[in-house]
Amino acid sequence: MRMKGLAASLGVAAMLGAALFFLAACGPTKPWHATDITGAMPDLTFHMVRASDGLAVSQEDYRGRVVLVYFGYTHCPDVCPATLANLSDVLKRLGRDAEKVRVLFVTVDPDRDTLDVLKPYAQAFGPEVDGLRGSAAQIADVARRYRIAYTVKKSPNYEVTHTSAVFVFDDRGRVRLIATDTNDTPGLTEDVRRVTAGE
Image (cartoon, rainbow, N blue to C red; front, side, top):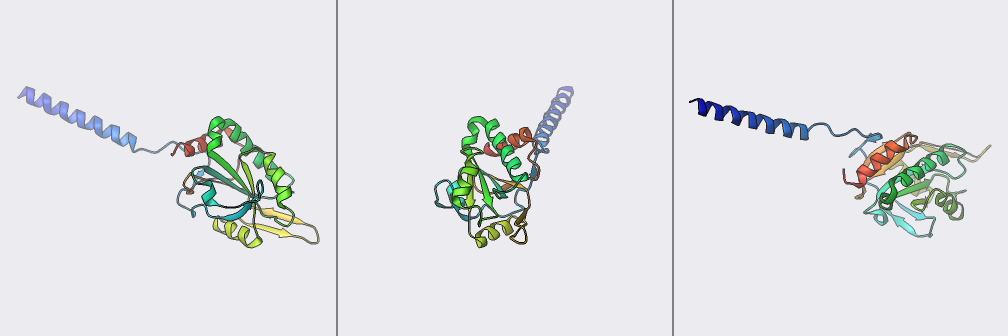
């Protein structure tokens, strides 16, 4: 009887141990530095012209890469260059993993941001940064899809305002994260690396 009781106790202990293991495995995942918005917005979809080569491109040209999307304009005095500089730092911190990532800088000011203007501006932040330009309708369509607000007033003074947020899409074009502040480049680097790893 004692042996049977001992065996039963050991069996229960083993089952409890296994249950605790699986509960731990199903527990909360490591928190992200940016905000997790998985499934909260549509998959990446756009049709624009890439400044670096003048080609018409869409989301299909970036399948297999993690994509960071940022809306701005080249005449932006502070926020845009600061954000792109932070993303450039993220790319440097990623090392070889940067090959799996592309940053798409979508201009909201296509009248001034011609391809000749946009190309050197984007490339100044790194070879993984692509400037994209579209018609007013194409830009408005993409901005509306991802809830980006922007205005362009040409008179009496030329003034552009826009939402400053970076969206992170995985290699299948699914939205994963949004960062409204990119100053924590080590944290954002960790997030992007996790997305490139398939988390």
